[in-house]
Length: 164
Image (cartoon, rainbow, N blue to C red):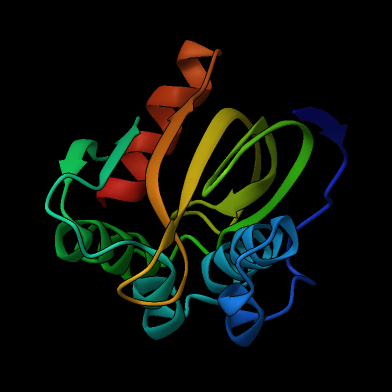
């Protein structure tokens, strides 16, 4: 089953970690919203609870490249949060794919970051996030993310800001 949904999960997203224990589509959506809460608030503790701790959990993005394992992914985000970029990202316009025990959300991330000069720089990513039901943890957890920027200049500027 699939749906097209404008989730609008951004700076006003809520920490719905408790709701991720529902073994339903609502639990998966709660995990997605909670991820965007953690991303926009720089909350590594919540972020670590949303990502799977499996060794093959993976992020493919323009800043970190390919990163595998829940702990390595949390470290990637720690570096991003400590870079001083002050991200504000909203997830929207998502094709959502449902199967028993799994949900994939493929859409856009719109937002901005603050560069070293203090300027707000807009950005737009194509992104997909894949969540599965984890019986061991009895809740939904993210196991994969892929993000990309189409504009090569914007990509370069974002990489430089994140690596500062």
